[in-house]
Image 1 (cartoon, helix red, strand yellow):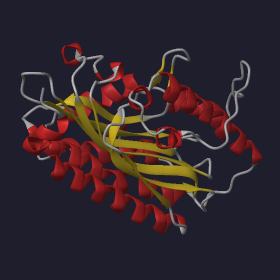
Image 2 (cartoon, one colour):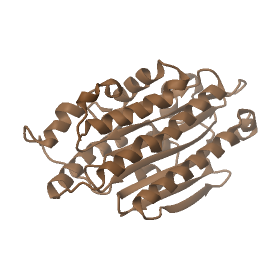
Image 3 (cartoon, one colour):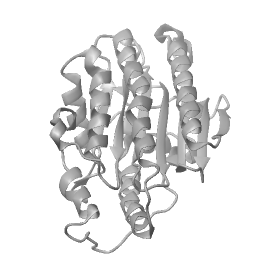
Image 4 (tube, one colour):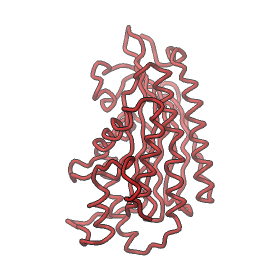
Length: 321
């Protein structure tokens, strides 16, 4: 039986790896400049013969000036059997060896007026016995505000739309809806945030076209997020805002541990736990049957932002602050 290692060269995975490492470096360089503090670099290797072979580089910050906790991780792994989370929509690949690589980031800012952000771009290859390799790409980015600003939501979604535009007019509405449906807490009946774009199992147009789409999404992250950080990080806040931020962060934890395919894939495949769970916020609170007071900014998050909206195409008159 062929192994991922012997077939990797036919997929030009080195070019994907080179792009992902460069993307990680560009993102960290920009985030360090905003925060003023360095990210810790933590490289790791899984030796041949391990349940999951490969290597990675975790880049993390805790207690920064802007980012309370966050990380941007690169990983490149190979395994002998795809875990259940990866074959949920491709049952014909159950039991196949695989190769996967990607960059995943989550940033949790100190300031409650600066939203949490998530971005991921990845490539999977499965090697079913006696067949050609099956390759697909996935990724996206989404924004989780604690206090909503329409200007920020519109900018983020318009950046996502612009990234997808060269690859097809139909992609943004499709990937936006996918994101709205994916980042939804079914047990709470509410979205995690204001969405963005999400795609998975994407191989349309072949390797080169799908790889180009992934690059467009990865390259769009900094222009989508950094202007929001720079606009909001100086806003004054107090204990009330921090308390609400901690409460809403609880939703983030619930989603990642219950529904997120990336988290489940990492844990089921024997991945590196510290890297997988770097997405967890540092301070979180839960309350019993709590609801915000009507007419407050906290209530406005629920009424105006935690619902699907066509952010990219709303008229300019909706802008405020």
